[in-house]
Image (cartoon, rainbow, N blue to C red; front, side, top):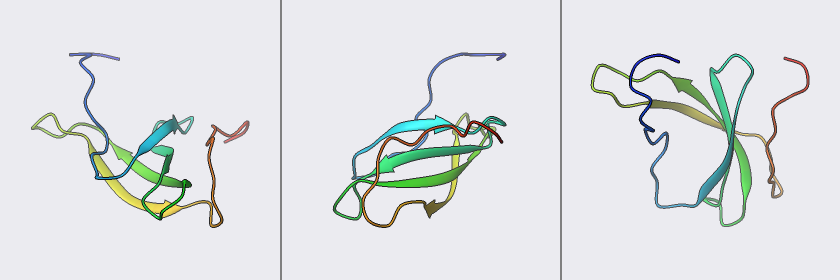
Length: 77
């Protein structure tokens, strides 16, 4: 970890997101969101800060389909 260690928001929406977990390689984030009306687990690509200092959240993919929570980092990658 180099440079300014100031926290930068990864995702800003009108929904409640939380429980973010990074993949072992640091390129993906699994998190929960209530955007469907209940908590579900999603995965997004994590792209490093751009020249403007903003983190870019890539396209999201749902991991759960009938409610979910507690995303965790896999034991093996």
